[in-house]
Image 1: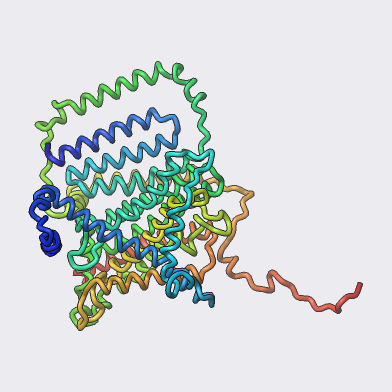
Image 2 (image 1 turned 90 degrees about the vertical axis):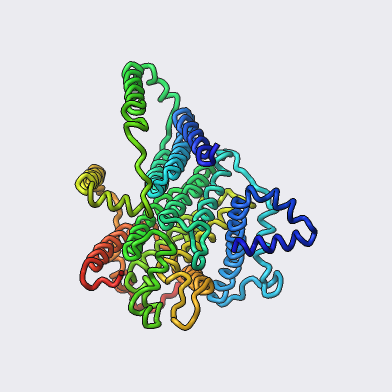
Length: 198
Length: 363
């Protein structure tokens, strides 16, 4: 077996196991960390496809930023697994068909007819820098979809800020400009008085 | 260099007449062995630098505070880091009762692994990198962004209040400054037209000043002066060093995520912190101060210039620590989000406009 093939199987095996542990792990923090491991191996698979920019972007964006904040939130949650379990049978009638539908869709997408090697031949590896090839493609051929995607992200960003922006009356906010501008006479008053005796 | 090393081996083992059987054994895996040797050649000096950086730090801060600093172990105290290392090595590693045992030990590993992995793409001299990959700059960003997991996992797994506070502060601070850092680097790769470290250094060796003998004026620090400052300050914040050391905050939360760790587990965090300091100093030298390039024409380029630049930035790290009081938490957030991020965004637009204008000097 070629070295790359062996590497592919190792990375995929860890990826599948980690993804399985994400949904089976009892501790939510462990689940998030397994998800990080899954991302890492997915990035390794992309490196095997010589898509180094996408692989590193996956790590910078998801592992380095998104999952950190996710972990941060999960650590603060007090999750009671018993309570979560209670809803299992009640929601099964809705969850079950949706799961089946998703499996059917995945099979349709991944089956050889529509997305197999014949229908979608592997693109030729970019000569020279992969990053440059990607940049050129994004900013020439796909500039409108790219701009549209960024506008959608911007809208989501502003919406998230707007939804969470509540003015609290009781916060003791500090104004650094006023703090810096403070003079001694604003805080201390020196009075001259005769010394006193008991 | 590979041939030279092979030659030395051949000569050495040839003295005992063992070369031929040995080579028959090693030849199939020689490329792997060669890479491993290069890794050792980077890691060992790095660890030695970390050890003596701690010594240098104590000495310099001592002098700045009109003290003497460590001077008991060995001549001029030079064996102090070795003694410290031995002490940590033989100390017992304690695990708190309620700690998550597995993650408690994953924490230190996750701290030091990215700090070492990032060195794989750093070029020390012309052609002197372990892996001279195209997206080197991006790779370093990815690896340094991984370092935060060590802090968070350690803080959470300790099952203790101070470490958890440290972990929460760390996740907010490091994510914030990563953005300013990444945006500052965007300007560098815009004018260098590459993500490869060697190309970035070579791009700094070109320009009007370089042609006229004063190469140091052609380096990136001059046209990108605000980004140079933003990058280095963000680097100080990323490594959680004073004045941004709220993550450790000795006077508030004792040592943050490291409170419950002892012995080698603690030493790993320590090694990671100092390895990261050296990494930030090295990256600043490569990206803004021309790496191994000589500042003037009549002196040869080489690793000694990079070493001198790294030492200068490391000295700045120590100088900051001896000089500035610790930032308050809200001030750190304000500096990161309301000063550095807008400043870098504006400077990206400025550099972009400059590059399409007739005054473009980056060709």
